[in-house]
Amino acid sequence: MTPGPKSPQRWIRPGIQALSAYHVPDPGKLVKLDAMENPYRWPPELVEQWLDRLRSVELNRYPDPGACDLSENLKQFMQVPEGMQVVLGNGSDELIQMLALAVAGSDRVILSPDPTFVMYRMIAEVAGLRYQAVPLNGDFSLDPDAMLSAIEQTQPAIVFLAYPNNPTGNLFDAVVVEDVIRAAPGLVVVDEAYAPFTDASFMSRLGEFSNLLVLRTVSKMGLAGLRLGLLAGPAEWLGEIDKTRLPYNINVLTQASALFALQHVATLEEQAQQIRSDRAKLAQALQGLDGIRPYPSEANFILFETPHGDADRVFSALKEQGVLIKNLTSSGGRLQDCLRVTVGKPVENQAFLEALQNALKS
Image (tube, rainbow, N blue to C red; front, side, top):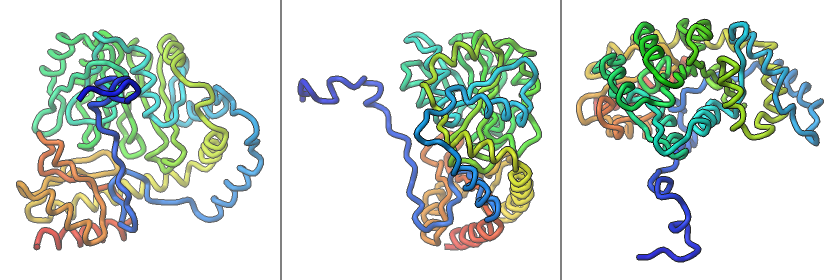
């Protein structure tokens, strides 16, 4: 059937029509362990202080377009090396989009391992770039030969490396990451979204490699609702990427709230340490369940494998018992039969474990 003259099928790019929108399930009243969020809220006294701060915000005025005060505070908190610059985004997703737009061209390639964060592929396709996925090894480590070969063949404009990786939770070998940075003809963006839950980072190595950028977010440290990300690296790169940023992209409430949070960062750091401790306990409990294979994690979630062909049933059984996690088996490949659970509060983790035990028995 020929599309009408004013139909979306005539005007929307075929590549966009072929995409599926990013789906976020409604958790309802379920125990929500599917989105890698920090489960802890601020204590009531801190909430009151935050609300007092917001009362002074002038909503009738545009925000500081460069979020200069916030940028400087984030640079200090995230230990951005001297001489490096930062650009802020409405979450790290916007920064990934800005990067893609800055290098976009029909013959340009974005490359990353597979499986990894789905937005690298989605944003590449939206921006009209070709996307090249390079399969990980069976243990979800980087395949050095495959990565270097793909870089040589495709000459990517950007290589994205999630560190730790999502959805697998593991850290890639730092030596292999260095080899990728040296071999890449364009940018290598090390995405450290889960930095609060690991001691590994490439932030201190900015400037050592002329094509290295580091991406961070405040979402996993307990501020997911603010939608605030940071891209750090040499000024010669960030000055060009910043041209793709829409004006006033960091609103006044986000700027005020993030500055307040950074003044009380000890609370967030205590929460991250609690999550690290609970992650170890949850991993140990999963290891003790017959038929379940948890994978090592340096993030705030654990990927685990269920008995062959059983992931959909186990996922549904968990939902029926009031627990929502992430079902990855439809992704296929190494993620077939895999589910991913966010580390929640101890009571939430226990509810998940009990529901999982019941699901495995049924």
